Amino acid sequence: MALDPVGDNLWLTEGPIVDFYSFPYPTRMVIARFDNGDLWVWSPVKLDEDLRAEVDALGRVAHLVSPNKIHHLYLPGWHAAYPDAALWGPASTIKRFPALPFQQPLEDTPPSAWQPDIDQAWFRGSIMMDEIVFFHRPSQTVILADLIEAFSEEFLKEHWSWWQRPLAVLDGVTLKKPGAPREWRLSFTDRKPARAARDKVLGWPAERVIMAHGEWQRENGHAFLKRALAWLGG
Image (cartoon, rainbow, N blue to C red; front, side):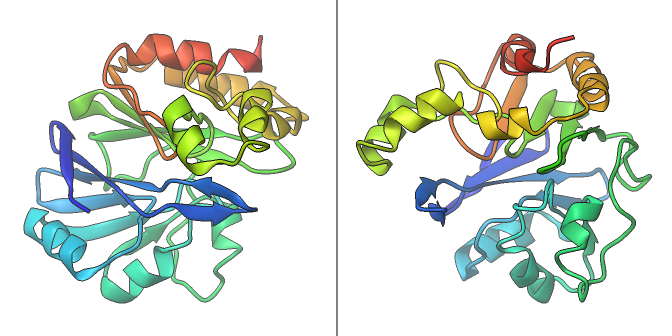
C-alpha cells in the first residue's frame, strides 16, 4: 500500500478488497494537502503502520471525511489514531456514529477550512442514500464514492463469480457503461436536487475523476461525468 501522487497536492491509495453483501468491492482513499500542511482524508482505507508513516510524512491529518453513510468502515480507526482531526460527513453518516464528535453535517457549501481548494455538491432526493461529491481545484479532480462505479472486465473476471458478473452489467456499473447502481437510481423519488447537484458538478473544469470503486479517469473527466450522470435526465 503506497500513496500515489495523482495531481497538484493530491494523492490516492488502494485499500483492501471488502465484502459488500457478498460482492467483492475495492476500496480507495484520497488525500489532499492544503497550503498550511493540513491533510484532508477522504474515505479512509484500512490504516496500518506503513500507510500511517507515509501519511504523517505528508503533513498533519486535520480532516477525516465520509462522503456517504456506507463509506465509514475505517473511520473509527482513523479517529482513534488522529483524535484531533475533525470528522466530517452528511447527516446520514453522523446518525450512524452518535458517539463520534462530528462537525456540522456536510451539504452543498464547503466548510471555510477547505476553501478555496475544495468545492462540493450534495446529491440528495433518494430514499436510499445521499452523497457529497467533491472537486479539488488545484488538480481539477472530481472525487466520488458510489455515485459512479466503473468496474473493468479484468477486475470482474478476477473477483466476481460467474453469476455476479452479469449483474454488474445490468446494474450499470461497468467501465463500458459507468454510473450509479441501478437500484440507487430508482430510489431518487425527487430528482430535482440531484439534477441541480449534477449541473454544479458539470460546471467544474474537471480533468480527472477518482471514484472509490472501479477504474478512475486520468483525463477527459468532464466528458466522463456527463456520460455517467446522464441517467438523471432533465
